[in-house]
Image: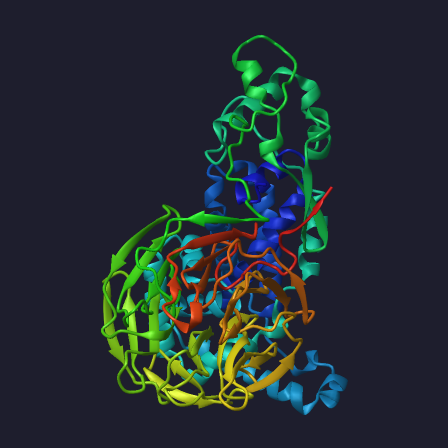
Length: 616
């Protein structure tokens, strides 16, 4: 199935304007934040955002490179913002107390007053920054875009964006950074915004795809053959994807992609008959049945529903950590009959591994996260004193740099990031577990304490909607006996509180908790440590409904592994297959990937309804 920008644009130009709603849902947050940073007014920013999408739809036929849609859309937003600002200079609109409803003032609550004061403080602080820095802060914290997405939209490099973010945080007060995530929460665009855009564009007539020349670069050669068919046979000109697929083959499968408040029909292109073969042979024969190897629009097919084997990690190990930078997975430290300093990078596009600069010290149970393109690794044990070391890794320079020590020395801590702040959660020392939660601010190289875990334990965490979810506990339950717990707790950084949530159906420890598109995949783990009992179970938690559902199990059970997500694909790496009689562990180099079919960033930027598929 193809859901990239080019396919959606092509569908719009082929007479199905409602498909444009997919692009609205995908980009409205970033465009709104970009405009808001300039005009500093919710209502005006909303109107300009609406105009930007309508202009883009009206001129969709003029876009030559479909892959540059986001950059083109941001240029439209920039031009409209500049036009609005010029009009404000020429025709300023003074504010008056007479415009305010006295009843609204009388009925305003203390809570809403404080919220407005907080919002005003953030706005005023933002206005003191140069536009370049204000822009990236708004896109990152309010537009929910990562550095790569911002770079693509603004036409620069991810490195440049990370430098701007770092500098912006230095200029911005720490307390203001903490407030950025919530200050504009009530001013976000809702699903109804997308619906209004879709209703409006139905009344706009746009130029369809050219049938003879000037095919956009984003369309494949075989797609061009369809245009030739349309030009030759006028009966093909007016069609929709449903009718087209039915005409081609009654066995073709279509799916409905539910986005926002409306469905969009998209073909599974691998099931479309090979039109080009009959045409190229010049035989004028009827359309033939599919040839999967030669089907047009040779798009990569979603491998949803099964786990696939990938290139083995060079160094088999367990007790390591994994962090993602620019679609590359960095596996750090661990154990395999020795405390490993080894760092190896997996290139997800090329399916190959590279060795990188080693950790300064060996680390079993090390934790790591990525912030602004740099990896922060902390804790981990090397057989010596309790670990409290924090190291920063720069993938560009391939260099480690020592940072401020963690206040509570420990290993097997869990790491999470919310709004650029790193959380070190739980963990253990040689003699006991800890419930300590401490946060590190990379901008100022400082640690501080937060509300402790409900009980001392190792745990595994994932972040959804700026909240941290802890599960997979590894802790002592009386008499030193280690048993799994099914508890799930949610941490709210705004309130600094932990809240009990629905239990994981399968109680287990050392599970990989991986956030994908607003849901958390709990993968593998141990149902018992002594004796060692691994599981292949995959269960999926939805924080919005506080419910669990069954996922597709791992092909081979394992524990003490690591997980990472890149472009909607879950990678499970290394771990232990067996630990016979508490003897030498059978350590794995294995890498397996599960394609969820959802193309998202690690921070899950797409709408919650994005990518819900149902057979039609």
